[in-house]
Amino acid sequence: MKLDRNTVRSLSEMSDDRLWRTVRMLVSSLGMDLPERMRGRMHYEAIRRTLSEITDSDIARINEIMESYKYHKNDRRGGGFR
Image (cartoon, one colour):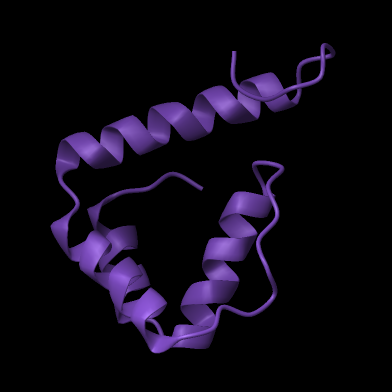
C-alpha cells in the first residue's frame, strides 16, 4: 500500500474498528504485529490527530521507510531495516 493524501483522508474518516483493522493490516504486511484490539478512545483520537497534521514530506518519508522495510523483509539475510 502506498500512502498518499487521499489515503490519509480516508483513514481519518474510518470508524474506530475499521481504522484499527486497516492499521493492523498495513503493519502486518511489513512483518510487525499489533494487538487485535486497541483500548481507549484517546488512542484513536491521537491517530486521527496525527493524520490531520501529516505533511506531504511526512507522507513521502513514510513511503520510503515502508518500501525499504518491504525490500529488506524479503532479503534472504533476515529482513528488517538496514
